[in-house]
Length: 496
Image 1 (cartoon, helix red, strand yellow):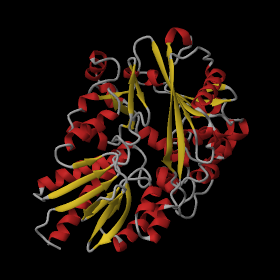
Image 2 (cartoon, helix red, strand yellow; image 1 turned 60 degrees about the horizontal axis):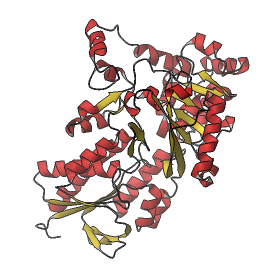
Image 3 (cartoon, one colour; image 1 turned 135 degrees about the horizontal axis):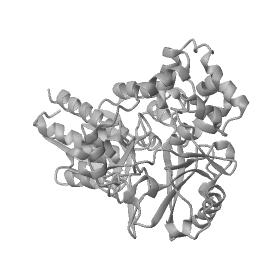
Image 4 (cartoon, helix red, strand yellow; image 1 turned 60 degrees about the vertical axis):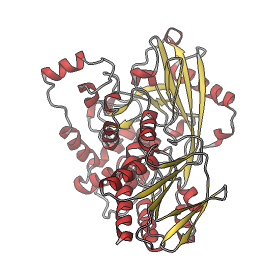
């Protein structure tokens, strides 16, 4: 290989993973004085993937993810680097609870439940979500022996074994498996909520272990200065106030697409960003690769990142064994329905972040975020914004419904569960095909197989995105940073 030739990196997929990878690898190469050409290829007419914010009549509408966990700091660090750290917002003060829909009524999630495990006795004993039999069965966790091995198992299998069917189906699954739009009896506990397995192995009882976690996380006494900050801040969870610091979930004042917009701006002058460009395949060329585009053009790559869904990467990469492994990662298609109202027309108090719906309820709606209650920046004064979620893995018949029929179904169910019969100001249906990867039992082992196969057969090709090691926006940003370091190592290795 010609050591003097400028090195080339191709990143397939312009979602948040691809953008983050491009951002960090460009920074690293500049810091190490490595001459490199980075090409980011995106099939659609916009960058950002599922991170997509709309604005209408003063409403801020998230069509994809609407927030991120505050403890996952990769996105906070990135936003600060991009100069938009002050746009980070927390949830409204006082909006810290939510509901579970059960038999046409909304029941408060019992206080003290952590990852579906009860840690406070009074709320657990008094909740109407569980029968007496179900509560007795859950309490058996205190005396049951731990599982003798630490092999992967499904989230549902672990929780059924420790706490029984009722806790899983009526509380834990809608809260935990709902994050993945998946079936708890198929999701890998090691790839989704490894803390549950670790807790059982360390403490034997999930209840005992999670009780210790809750006590260790108990908030310290609030200082006078933090009280003052909270009162004199914006009052709506915005800015770098103590309200933001105390919030479990964070977002961006102008919507999460702010991150995409600022990444594009940071990258536009330093890398080649190609929209409306589809890749048809990848082939080997010496120690590198040729990326074939549908328009007949070719891109040469010394290294590349496949920041696409797994089934797309499976179609584009030439090795059959790698493609077969990628095809074992299924995806669920989901939708969300946005509904905007005048507050005076709704007539009920929306005092929580929303509700989730157990699978066994047989509803079209799987969850509903009371968006304007949770996020102050999302609706103008005197208005309400709701976002209803539709679709789970294995329950995707609603894909075939027209927008009109889907909205009608959702409105009917919201009237039954919430009592809202008013005509919305507007509605919007967002369809996200193949948006939610399913981390089935053995997922981490398959990831290791994929890593090994790529290192042996296609060195310098890396996989990133929601289908692999975390579905949240911070997870994808973290993957971008990790892959950027791998790309740098690759470029250094082929230069010596």
